[in-house]
Image (cartoon, rainbow, N blue to C red):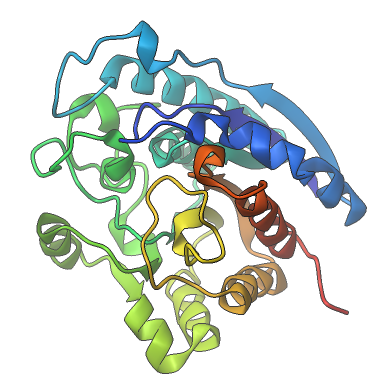
Length: 300
């Protein structure tokens, strides 16, 4: 594959500082070199420029740092669309999960122009399905999936164009274990397919990822959005919002290996690596391991 890495060193969508250093940590862990060792052609595009919170004021407590989040995501959407049109695979590294609005907007623009169906596999401890009217914190990293299916503030839903970026029936969540009450209600109403950690405990990851991909069988472009907090914090302590009881090492790798075997992933992002909370960069190193599994690394 021709893979193009795009960094977004932004933590404005989060409630805790540090994930703006995630792209650097992932690069230090050797993401480009590891992908090249698998035979891929890799180009690192560098980073989308973003302003830190110290240089800004919060104008709306329900949508914190909204103007800069929208600006960064709009730039990202343009880059991702360009990369997709060139036939390359966008690999976006963050940064907090609000950047997914830009990634998905860029992929959606390309899919729309070529009359293709977009599907999203969202791997996360959280639903990220709040809006400005339901979020208890006003942190936008809890809103990107709802915005991508057309819910919430117009400033977010119109990033990259004023249209719904992905049909909620073509969205699948995996590894979820922490949902706000308002999110639960909307997820049920919109018919979002969701596999919680309880589902994985009951039937195993092999069954869950098979069912997830079966649900997405009719999509032409499959975007995988991986929040490292999907993994248990015992393995990945350096994440933006850790939640106990996540994926173990082999469950996470099996998920990624199955994606590779299916050969249907056309774009990916990995977010919420927080070096401030990490132990000798091991969370970033795990992130790189998971990415390489998704792009073809095998045990034998």
